[in-house]
Length: 384
View 1 (tube, helix red, strand yellow):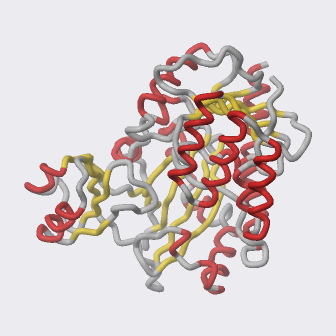
View 2: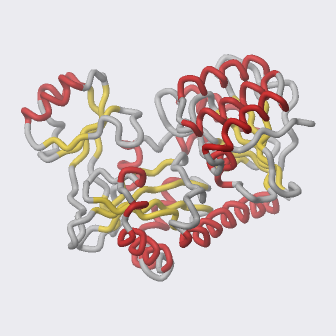
C-alpha cells in the first residue's frame, strides 16, 4: 500500500518550542483527509492536549483505519501494529521504540463493531499494541479472534496482554522465588467502606482501577483515612494493595523501568525520589546531578549488577507473562528481593531526554531499540 507517512511522536517530542508553529503549518500544507487529522492527533498528544488529540483521532478513523509512521532510513522491516482507539497511553509507544531505525511502522486501528479495512498493508510481523484496561478489553477480545489465523507472526498475543491487570499480574507472579509483589485485590467502593479485604492490614495503597501515572494513588494508614479517601474519590472499583516500604538506606526511593524483550532484561531508566510515589517526571532528576550520577552508575552496571542478582526472578517473570515485549516497574528491597509494582506493554520507553543533561542514557536506549529490532528479525526468520 502507498501511504503518506506521518511524523512520529518521537520526532515531534524533539522539536523546540520555536519549531512547533512551523510544524503545524507543515502538517496542514502536506496532509489531507484522515492523514491531516491523525497528524494532529500525533502533534497534540505530544503537547499534552489530550481531549483535542482524541477529537482529531476520531475524525481520522471516520475516514481511514490505516496509517504509516515516517521511517528515518530505508525500510527493511515491515511491522504492523494493531491499535485500539485512545490516547497515547492506551497503546504501546511504538513511535519511540523504532526511532532512527529501518523499521516501517504501519498502524491499523481496530474498532469493535467495525469490519477490518478491505486492504491491509503487507508486513513481516504484527504486534498487538493496546494495553490491558476495561476500555481496551473489547478491543483485545476482538484482536484475539482476528489474529487466531493471522498470515504473519503476531507478537504480544492479546490473550496474554489481557492478563496484565494489576491483580492479574499479582496472581501470575506471586509465587516466584526471590520476588516480592504486594498482594493486590480488586474491590468495589462499597466493600472498602465496610472493611479491608481479608488478608490485608494497614498500611495499604489504594487507586482507581485503570488509573495510570499515579492518578488517585494514596497510602492509607487507618480506617478513617480510607473513609476520607472514598468520600473524595467517586469511583466504583479500586485496587487495594499491601504497602511495602522500599526506602533505601539513604532515605530515597528508587524505581527501575526494565523492558523484557524476547525474555531478556534491558534497563530503561532509574527514577530516584524522596517520595514513595516514584515517577520519573516528578522525581526532579533533571535538577539533581547526584541523582543523575546514581542513575548513570545503575544503568552502566545493570547487566553485571541488578540483572545478575535477579536473573532467575526476571526469567520467571518473562516465562509467566508470555509476552514478547513487556515493561516492568520494579525496585530492590533492603533485604535484596526484587519488588515488582506492575507489568505492562505500554510503559513509555524513549531516548528523547536532553543530551546535554542525560548523555549516559543514549547507549542503554540504543541497546533497547536494537533488541526490539533483533526480536523482529528473529520472528521473521522463524516464519520462513
